[in-house]
Length: 298
Ligand SMILES: Cc1cc2nc3c(=O)[nH]c(=O)nc-3n(C[C@H](O)[C@H](O)[C@H](O)COP(=O)(O)OP(=O)(O)OC[C@H]3O[C@@H](n4cnc5c(N)ncnc54)[C@H](O)[C@@H]3O)c2cc1C
Image (cartoon, rainbow, N blue to C red; front, side):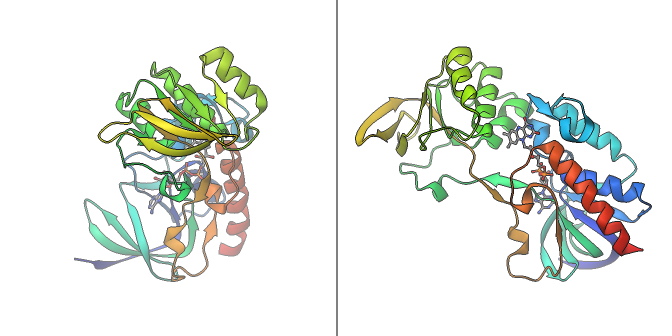
């Protein structure tokens, strides 16, 4: 049963990733004490929690860290903030009024003078990319692969194909290497990589993985398990044998909560803004947004 628990806060931040935590910490530093962060996972830190490689934090902390180290650092900084993990914002019941679920309380309504949306971005789905073939468990995006490998210690396949040529596609490659998985190939629809071209050279020389550019994925083959992918390049079709598919990149903002328009005015910080940024830039941008917001709360 849904209850209205009468909670009312100055600021509620939805999402406890780099942007949400940094926003809340900065508001506290500026003297706004009534700030609550609602995070659906059991641990705050966002995507970096399961990116077990280096490359985080330079823009915000002037230090390069691994993803989990960076997430841990942000959690430490937020130690004095009311961060509620296991709390999912389900929808808006009106401007500044959220329906929130947690295992302990069920569904309650929480109100805020200001709402910050820091829910990040997600890789677009296989369905959105019009990829044919059966729905099989060995087909996943980079985020899911990283959660399996880094958080659960599971290697879901031995010889997958990686779809995409963005930074995150190479993050998928590094995750595979970490887990002892050797991808059969990387398939890039465009004629050049979105990531720096040197990454393509590195994929071949460092990891022994060929990058096929201007190559389109048509369908995933297999009935109970992935057995291959059908691809097309220069009008010619062929099958690459593999046992899994990582569909990487093409991020879209995670802003479904704003659909329907009930939310009223909401401040977006981090990757939910639309432009895909590094975690450090998300953190720095959120701190700047907190400085702006603090002036309007006085
Ligand atoms: C595979 C991969 C590799 C990457 N590698 C790098 C790298 O090497 N270096 C780098 O700087 N950046 C890297 N990035 C990018 C970096 O992770 C992001 O820029 C950063 O995490 C964005 O921060 P954010 O706070 O906007 O969103 P997120 O980190 O996505 O955090 C959003 C949070 O909101 C929570 N949330 C969502 N919806 C709700 C809801 N309804 N209720 C409550 N909570 C909710 C989520 O659980 C999550 O914790 C990588 C990203 C990926 C996917």
